Amino acid sequence: MNSYQGKTFNVVTYGCQMNVHESEKIRGVLSSLGMQEIEDIESADVVVFNTCCIREGAEDRAYNNVMALRPIKEKNPSKIIILCGCMPQQPKGKYKLKERLPFVDIIIGTHNVNQLDQYLLKYAMTKEHIYDIIEKPIGSLDNNNCVRDDKINAYVNIIYGCNKFCTYCIVPYVRGREKSRTPQDIYREVKDLVQNQGYKYITLLGQNVNSYGKDLKEKMSFSELLTYLCQIEGDFKIKFMTSHPMDLGDDLIKVMKQESKVAKALHLPVQSGSSHILEKMNRHYDIKHYMSIIKKLKRAIPNISLSTDIIVGFPGESEKDFNLTLKLLKKVKYDQVFAFMYSKRTGTPAATFDNQIDEKEKNIRLNKLLRLQKLIQKDQIKKYFNKTYDCLIRHINGIAVGITDGGKDIYIPNYKYVNQNYFAKVKVEDIRNHKLSGVIK
Ligand code: SAH
Ligand code: SF4
Ligand code: F3S
Image (cartoon, rainbow, N blue to C red; front, top):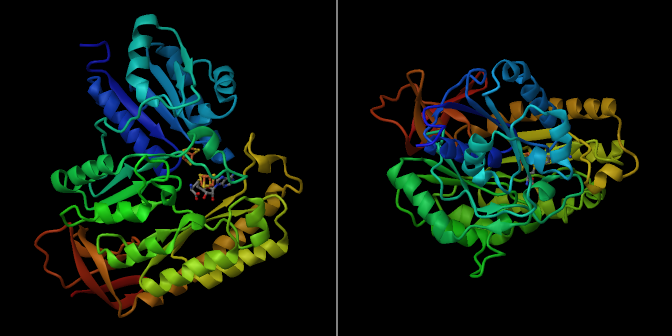
């Protein structure tokens, strides 16, 4: 019995899938202290803000939402507010936040969030604020029971940290160096999720999954890991993110093509269409190389769904560089593009580069790019006609729907379904109002 037994909590999450999954682990830790999750952050006894600092916007959102709790905390001092994740882990992050948010009870970083239960128990005894940011991880959160929201797709970490140091990016500073989990550990977790918990998609997570296994005593490449996980019996598919173009080899393309359990979808961030900008970003590839990967992928897996990340307005990005990015979008025809305005991150090399682009110009470029991508996507719908996709069959509002690996819905109006959540081949036979419909093959 501890003093948190029967109390309520809420976890607010910002940032990438890694953070979303970390919050699932945090919810597991809090539940194992005997606490109950509720939706209302105003009345929850414990509120955890699991933060992101990838761009200024993410930081502002978290900061404003924490500030909004201040009056409630003043009325009810026994409410416990915790801030963790990437924001406090930034160089000098703890001090900045300690001064700006003095009413927050516990501030910890990414490397010690696995000790959250210990910090809470300590806080219950001393009632003294805790500010603790450590430089290197101790232990891991891997073996905790996570509380997953989604019942279809489960996130599974395979590698933590990043060694790439792209010049714009804060991640290597807040997540530390690459550290792979053992294949046996991952296998056990995936097997349990598929065979005991009924998950249909497993999404393997890492800042750069293609670096998987390089740091292990017994080396294993990412494509070997995929082959190993595909041996798990069951009706499920494996997705993964994020891939770095520099480390994506022919072995991965081969496994993606051959293994029916590997989803035919790939998120491959390009960041810019200009090789000159890519060099300044320290991305270690040029557009020629990137395009050669795209070509090979499309040739090997004609139905592949591709998505990417783009940064507009990186320091020194000329009109010509930006136009090369637009040209790239027209060439690749991604199914989805996540585009961001460059955000200066203190402590990263690009923050000190000359020729920073002004916010207005970045905004103009972003909107131009988004408009173009919208047109491309509208046009892309044609490519689905008469093609057959391996889909997860679900019921949505009483209609059977096949969901492709890339997340596209194909309605199956004439299908008299009995059950759902299984994979089947669906052929697209009609496209109307940008909606696909088809039949099960
Ligand atoms: N590890 C992944 C994702 C990193 S963060 C990768 O290498 O692709 C997700 C995306 O945020 C990045 O792909 C990049 O497009 C964007 N991003 C990172 N730092 C940024 C910054 N300072 N300003 C704007 N966008 C940024
Ligand atoms: Fe950031 Fe680059 Fe690492 Fe991705 S690969 S997390 S963009 S440093
Ligand atoms: Fe943000 Fe940290 Fe992810 S900075 S994008 S939450 S690794």
